[in-house]
Figure 1 (cartoon, rainbow, N blue to C red):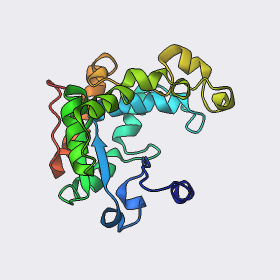
Figure 2 (tube, rainbow, N blue to C red; figure 1 turned 30 degrees about the horizontal axis):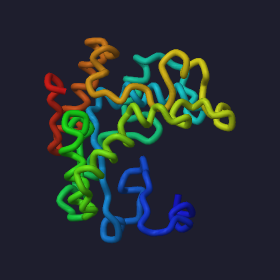
Figure 3 (spheres, helix red, strand yellow; figure 1 turned 90 degrees about the vertical axis):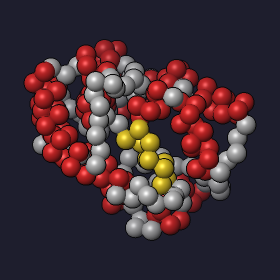
Length: 209
């Protein structure tokens, strides 16, 4: 990633799934960061799909076991709560904009205006509408790389998972967990959320999202 950044002319943008603790300690003093938080119930559903889809993870266990690994903080790139806490503790830094996935789905243009103001891009309404169009889930899913079907990339994805549940971009919805989690699994994630995330200030209103 560092090599890619060095080879990219400024101004430049890069995406990372790493928590702040694994980035340079002075990161926020040098660049602006947009951090997106998502409802843990949707996170576990989405991450399960990703872990089945990608050969790097190669997960072949049950969904129930995956939920248990999630709440036990026993998954690659976890624990999720600690990842979020790293950002939440920095939320007042002027170079950090913390957003919620659910807010992006509810009022995309409103959240784009927040991003525009944060970055100082001063885009026109027409430009913002173009950003909304080209960054929409429908547009992204329509790009060939999103499906995981490019010839040179097929070795990294599982065709049977793509056929069954979709590729890298699956649904892009909030609240999809309602059709996936059993009452027992929902209770497991609720208990974990109350213990790990609500304790440092984040509350998720499941009945709304």
